[in-house]
Amino acid sequence: MQVWMLKRPRAALWIPVMNGGINKKCYDELRAAGTVTADRVSGLKIGYEKGVFMGLGPGYKKGDWLVRFDTLQPALDAGLPATVVVDRPVIQQILLNNGVPENTVRIKSRIKYYEELGEGQGIKVVLEDGNIAFCDVLVGADGIWSSASNIEEVSYQILLGKDKYFVSTDGGGERQQWFALIREPAGGVDEEATDENPSPKLKRLLNEFSNEMPGDANGDVWDGFAHELLRATPEENIKRRDLYDGQPLITQGWAKGQVAICGDAAHPMMPNLGQGGCQATEDGFRLSQELATVTSTKDISASLQTYFNKRIGRTTLIQTAAQLGSDLLVDFDKMMTIVRISG
Ligand SMILES: Cc1cc2nc3c(=O)[nH]c(=O)nc-3n(C[C@H](O)[C@H](O)[C@H](O)COP(=O)(O)OP(=O)(O)OC[C@H]3O[C@@H](n4cnc5c(N)ncnc54)[C@H](O)[C@@H]3O)c2cc1C
Image (cartoon, rainbow, N blue to C red; front, side, top):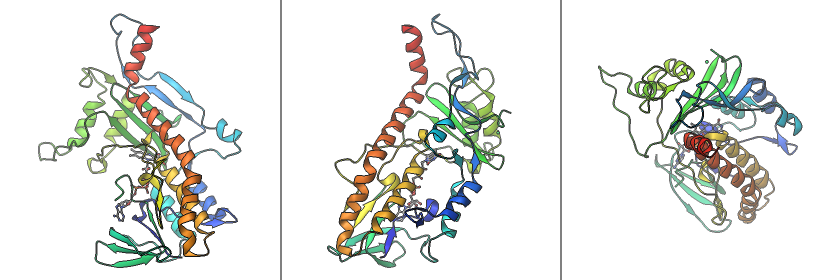
C-alpha cells in the first residue's frame, strides 16, 4: 500500500512495528542516544525578584522553587523507564536507519493540492515542483497550518515571571535547550540586524530577562540563569514564532475518506507539557498499526476512523492540560497576587 505523509522528514512519524510494538533495535538506540533527565530536579522556579505588593504579604525571592516535581517515581510506578531527552534530528536518523525502506522519505516534496479519485481508487497528489504522485492513503502531518551554574543539579526548569517565562532543559551532550515565552499580540516581527545592532533578537531577550537593575520593562530583575543561556546562544540560532493551539476536533474528526491528519495538524497544543511531538509520534505508531490491518483499499476509510477513535480521548486530555498549564504559567504573577490578597 502506498502511504503518503504530507510533510518533510523533520520529525518523521514512522515507527517500525515488530510484534505489535516498537522495533527493539530502534528502541535500544533511541534510549542509548537519550539523556536521562529524571534523576535530577525539575520544576517551576520564581524567575525574578519582586518587592512587597501593596504592602500585602511577602515579595518573590528570585531563584526560589515554587514547585518541584518528581519525574522518576511516576514512571517507575507505571512500569516505565526513566524519561530521556533526545534531539529530534537524532530521533529522525534512528527511525530512518531502522525500518523505513530506502527512498521512502523524500524531502522538498511540498504538496500543492490533492484529489480523491473515488472510494478505493486512491489519491492523486500534486507537488509544488510539478511532480505528481499517486497513493492509497494521504496523511497530513503538515503541522498546525494544515491545508547550562546549576546545570548538573537541574534537568528541567521554568523560570516564572510577569507575562513571560523561560523554559530550559538538559539536551544532552553538555547542551541546554531553551525557549522564552512572552505574551504579546501575534504577528510581531523582529528588527532587522544592522551594523549598529547586529543581534536584535538576542538584545531584546537580554532586556526581557534582564538580571541587573533596573531590570526588565516591568522593573523585575531576573534570575541570572536565563541570561547565562541567552548569552551562550548565537543570534542566528534564535527563531521567533507565534504559538497557537486549538480545540480538540472531537466532532469534526481527523479522517475523511482516504485522507487523514495527525500531529499538530490534528491536535495543536501549547508546548508546556512537551507533548506535541510525542503525541504526533504516537499518532504515527497508531496509524501504522491500523493501516497494517487493511487488506483492501476499500477498508482504508474505516481503518482511518478507527485510528481517530483510538487517539481522540488521549490527545484531547493532553491538549486540554497543555492549554491549562500555559494559561496558569503566563498568568502566574496575577494568580500569586490574588492568593496573597485573599490569603
Ligand atoms: C517552543 C516549543 C517547544 C516544544 N517542545 C516540545 C517538547 O519538548 N516535546 C514535544 O514532544 N513537543 C514539543 N513541541 C511541540 C512540537 O514541536 C510539535 O508538536 C511537533 O513538531 C508537531 O509535529 P508535526 O509533525 O505534526 O508538525 P511539524 O513539526 O510542524 O511539521 C510539519 C511539516 O510539514 C511540512 N509541510 C507543511 N505544509 C506542507 C505541504 N503542503 N506539503 C508537504 N509538507 C508540508 C512543514 O514544512 C514541516 O516540515 C514544542 C513546540 C514548541 C513551539
